[in-house]
Image: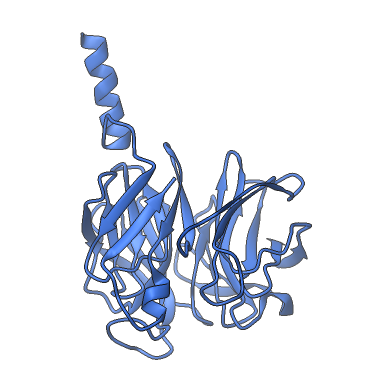
Length: 290
């Protein structure tokens, strides 16, 4: 009995629940419209952004939503990363928030436990997604330009890589840090994936995945989430082999997904019903699906 209780306690500590996380999690929060998602290992819950409200919220495996970061100057929040007790979130104004600060673009850094703001850093070119290296440096994509920006732990901003191939109507978008020592980013408009190391940009021998939005590295390979929100892409989730960059699997999606999060229970894809928001409406519903 003592051993069984100890095992259950360990499960609760790690996952926040002793039961299996469902394949489908339906969330509801007033016009939240999340674009980004990450796993919070300290709570065993998800973190989601909000294009409409510029917040970061917690979502439990049962779908319960509660705010973590609110009341800041951020108009819309997009990609999220968790690193060393911090939440890093790309933010800006793309014209679909409940208020407007034209030209806003940056990286917000918050305490993971309390949601308290630690730093706001201005980043050019419409910040959209963020990746973090082992030293705590953040790399931010700017789809309105041709540059990946580096933000040091002290908040210093510099151009890490600049290449004309990163630019488009909606250019470099999703980004991840590969533990082999480089970044991978995708051009949303033409679907090209790039390897970026020490300022050098190299096209990967991967298929063109038009509408490439979120990138997530998993033990199975690189997950590329595509949609047709701003380009003639497919609503799909594609798994690439990170040795050959060939397709291992591809799954069509019934909604417009934007990115995914790796969790101890599998990889979950977020669909924030952004098609509804971009068309001028709102909805309270969103989903996370494994």
